[in-house]
Amino acid sequence: MKKIFIDPGHGDQGGDFGAIALDGTREADITLDIAQILKKLLSKKYQVYLSRERKMSDFPIYNNNLVFFSFYICKLLY
Ligand SMILES: [Zn+2]
Image (cartoon, rainbow, N blue to C red):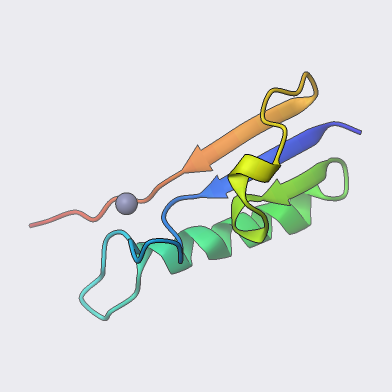
């Protein structure tokens, strides 16, 4: 089964939660929500891993059957 590694930007390691919206919503929480939805959808066809569920260093990144997907969200300032 092909593998997809999803890395939602920012997270709970190191205290960097990314952009913060006016209402306090954190980028790290939105990217995690998106990643969990993607994982649920893609798990029907692929073996899906989330970076926040395991240490990146524990995962064999160099793998012929692996697609690596990392994403962030920006905050518009105006
Ligand atoms: Zn960010």
